[in-house]
Image 1: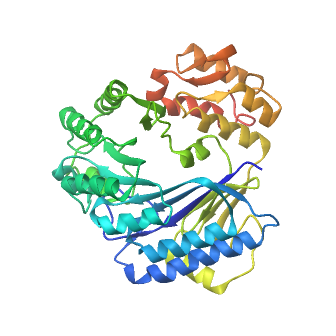
Image 2: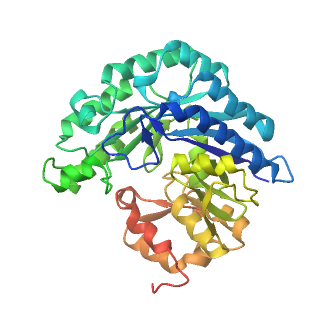
Image 3: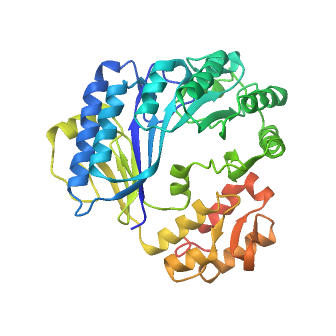
Length: 398
């Protein structure tokens, strides 16, 4: 069996960011201990349902703000994972961290637990932009967090950045990117701001209180990032992600998602794809803890916290493998690997769509024997227009 990945959702924050629509809650630190107990219980109960000790090669703590947990709480969660799963000796363990919640001693203790990758939510190098986003940290906190991370022994560090912010000018974005690179991270994740209904930024925009850059300006920010990071020897290996080109620092956990390989999610709002099903846990943290406290017996692939269960048939899995795999800008979708997995090549299954997308300049064939199907540079800007051609292809008119 191919090794799986484990995602752990920590929904607690000191303050909810103005753009966030993730499963998170603020001002509930008093509930963290109970939540960690429920999380450990979910892992134990889920693994107990399996007849084999499943191999795991990546673990990812996301949020929310995972770094609101104490070191002992991290230790408790990791102890259950190490005990219940067959963990690789070279396992990648990532923790998302808010720069405003860290100290050197805390980071050293996390590193001692075996956590070897840290992802800092930098977002911007400009304090006014950080305030507009509702972040609790300042730019100088990022600089300090990077320095402390290095002193603590973290050799794999990611910085998250957001572009297309309200009122943001191209020069401000260029400065943020240049400053981020000057901090020498091994990995960078760049995301265009998405205005989600129900968030403060969405409300302010609808009321005309702030204005976001138009699509052409945002596209220009993305193109600048592609060109600039290439000159700094960062390899764009996914639409929104860059890693040092010579050192193999791609995020193995996220590669699991993009290759459409199995992963299991624990915690409120966590998602999973395992044993041929996609699952989603109940998103409310209090309801999650209530369900785990009741300890209702479940059947694989579910846990007592499972709220949504969807069977992924062969057709859907092929479509999702194309959509997710095409996000990988270098690797793309391998025709050989696709055939080994499904008994058909992408050309055999999606020939009409592929011919069209190549004709309009969104896809290209590359590599030995044209094995790799991937987005063109233009396709990276218009990825959704390519992905939509692989949705429900058996039932829609093409």
